[in-house]
Length: 158
Ligand code: FES
Ligand code: FES
Image (cartoon, rainbow, N blue to C red; front, side):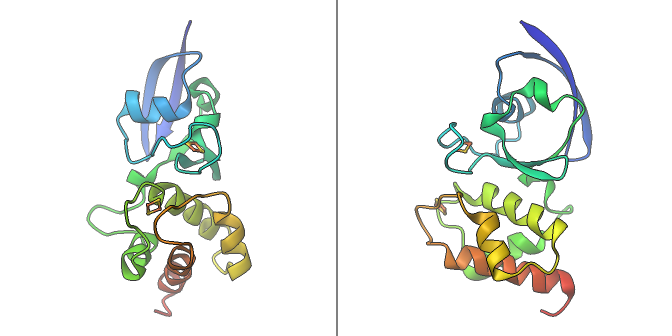
């Protein structure tokens, strides 16, 4: 069965017909073509598919595309402004927090959702925001440090 949805992704409006069983992750990657959002476990356990929907970080593998009707979504492709990387992306580069990069889009979106809400996030807040995001490469110190660096850059103290 098909259903029409209207969804804004990274500032652009999309009107699409989707299967009612299609996940938001499949919609973003396969229908819209934003493949920066990664499909990991597809079971809500790894965090790789995290996007921001109506201001909240959500796991897009656990949401149906039809549930995103009228939503506003940001994916990792919407982070940078033209050629200027987001401070979070700059922080990841500075600390070497991305290796294979598979977890990175989800980590970045979780970090952005946190900093949008709490520009003065504590270390504890950062750990809480990133908890449940699995990384097999870097360990988590460089990732959490990247969020702190981004915070300093946004505040202009770095
Ligand atoms: S792919 Fe969605 S949580 Fe792992
Ligand atoms: S950088 Fe490879 S899983 Fe995190």
